[in-house]
Picture 1: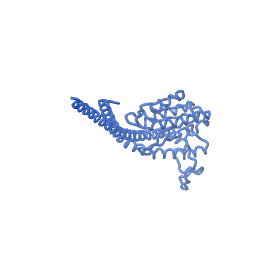
Picture 2: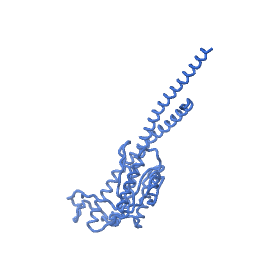
Picture 3: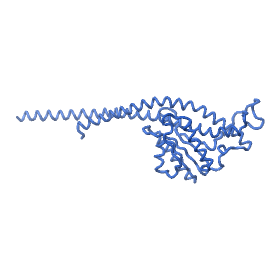
Picture 4: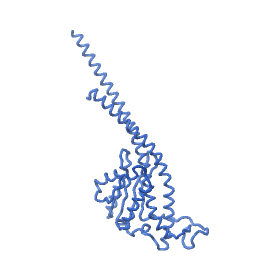
Length: 300
């Protein structure tokens, strides 16, 4: 049974931990607001750009012209999986959920006879995946957006991915990240980057003068579709990665705030139990001393 001094030291230690977790919760809550606003602001642009490129892609495919980032290599033998996690822990199941989904997907692809390459963005994901799939890692990026996440951070990764594609290192690239839903809920999301995913259903017909005479593309582009695709396809990879990193940043702060809130509550419960145990032990020690004093007085 621990002594009164041990219990007192343990209560003091848990109180110190509770102060830290409470402070981390407040910091995460402040960062969450900014990260959530940034993620929500990026969604419309990323979705509109992808929809426009899908519209352009359908026109380019009809004319027989297709860029490599649009059409891909025509094969599906080598997969590049971009795993976006965080550099820091203490954020609940944020990183483990992404790693768990990645492990499942990699095992499925390997079982299907595919060659898999991992591109890790974030220290935690790289550390956890290195144990089982270290031989598959081709790149690792850490401290991305350490001070403040900017588009240039995602653009650097996008340029590296495009160079690897042009060098023939992979056929299909996809990114996995946590999409922010709420402070207590994040959704593991897979998104294909190369080749460009084209919507299965065409856009609505436009009967105005802007519609091209040949095909169902409802807009007229200046210059033509091929020139616009050549410029926007690389840009789209950077935008989609930037959106994924923003979603991850918001999800990380939400998960950390929730985890630190739970840790603070658990510390409070532990303090109550330890305090009760300390008081009982102290009362038992006092009662024992009184019994010894009374017994000694009666013996005299």
